[in-house]
Length: 277
Image 1 (cartoon, rainbow, N blue to C red):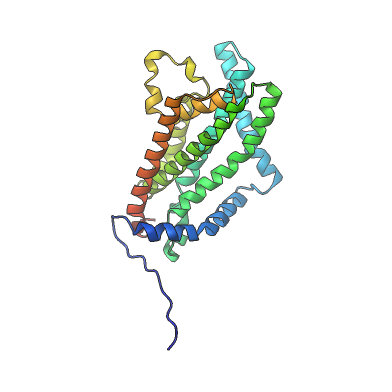
Image 2: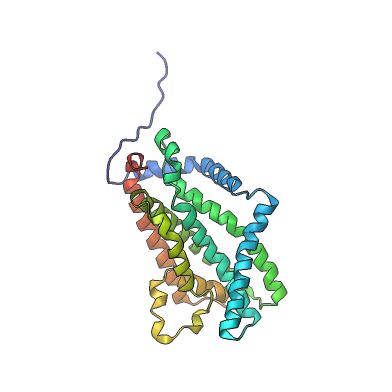
């Protein structure tokens, strides 16, 4: 008698979660695929070339220089802390916006893969976030050099940057998972996304600091999911101060909420993607 091999069959259905234990086990086994798929996306963006990596750094640096000039012209004042705040927050904001822009089409762009291979579809937005992380890492080196040139203060409080980055990655991953699923049903969301990210940039403490906002407008802090993240990031890496506990808790609450809500929505719908993409 010939030995039999077990086969995993994915049956289509419209809603309901798959067996989570088996799902996460399968996802963990595919971690090598996630890494290789992310590398292929980076190679497509010329990340493995010198000029590709230089452009990843020059783009936000040039943008921060342009914004800083506008701040000087409009506000009439400038200092090294303001430029450090602008650059640091812009780099971290790019981690979120890159996750969104890469994640929004991660599922629809993987149409052939979805139709021909059985695998946890959540691997696609995860790979998009991994790509955004690799694009973010060189900016950390550049900002470390920049803050040394500017002579910004330094203390042990700067190690708070580690949990802030972890919270930001969790938040960015939740956004990528959520928007990739939404884009399957509403394809126009990809066209709307640049306007959303630009609006989010202007409403976040990047071109201005959180301390500049008027007291009657402080409610923006509660309804803008990246407000507390960027405020904490600026306090730590620019001013070398400990972040406010309330800001950290708000940031963590946003990140966990968006991640779990987005993941639930994605997992409950992913087996329908094959007939939608």
